[in-house]
Image (cartoon, rainbow, N blue to C red):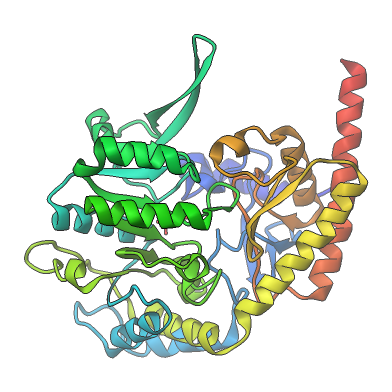
Length: 441
Ligand code: PMP
């Protein structure tokens, strides 16, 4: 399972003296000896500085839905460049992309653009507070919505007097503790708990911020019953339902997870797949709430609605709307699951698949997780060992099972065959290592 990372390691040594952890996003740091630096990416593959080739299932945490360096999208981006740059004036691209979004997402009565998922969620939460005149919000355990104070909270498992309890704690230093007074969390798919929390806090909640498919917790999907309950409770208590579709949007269905699960958000957020990797995000929703944008709630910024990203978004969304791109990535994901299922079954490893095949979670538990709590009980040690072996063998998945496996239209039959062949090798080696360790113990 040899892979030379001499150049990556040497680059890390130099980079870490100037850039904290040697990277520009904490999630790109995989340890001193395993942090990768990219040389180039094309289609479904990328190459590191050492020339190691990988079939990529991370796709930048989702954006690259049509594969890297997609000719039509890149050509559109170059046309966007012809505008001449950032001018602090709007361009007609904005309306074009907003119309495309509205055509696919019924909830998107009005649309605004920003640069990142974080910015979009931040604006949507502020809008929800402005609309309701309330300050608190409810999130799901295991949800992720970006790097800002209001959402950098997680539920931590604790044993108190032999009982398991979950406590909401800050997910970063520097987050004011008092922000936590405004944050509530619930486990996904527990309708009773949701009703209880709304009964207790509903009148003070501005928003229920939810990923309908938990893209940062192995892709756990909401049940239809849960979504219906959530919608009903939000309506009853006047709480803004914000569906964060940063990962699911324009990927799991043209109308996102909302279409898949038959629900209409009050506000929703998009990013990632909407421009095949060019930096852009969108806040969309009910005209009444979005109408607060103006003197009452500011939104915008120097780089908002950058013409290059918008031009790329226009082309990407056109392809997603008009071609069979989404059907193809779903079918590939299903075949990947079938192949993995047969391998893991042969080895007698309890496993399940979670969420949507185009961004599927692979979890080492006997039945699909219903919430983060189930995911916590899966066999992380074995999964992480298999993932590390896969990385060594040229299959790039996240080192832990939090992150689903993302599929692009560039993944073809050859990728599938190579992936499954390597999954078998990776599983075999991980089990062998586990047995060796058990014998030594
Ligand atoms: N929401 C969700 C559901 C996400 O998955 C992410 C990023 N992984 C974000 C928000 C934040 O997006 P960004 O990294 O573009 O700020």
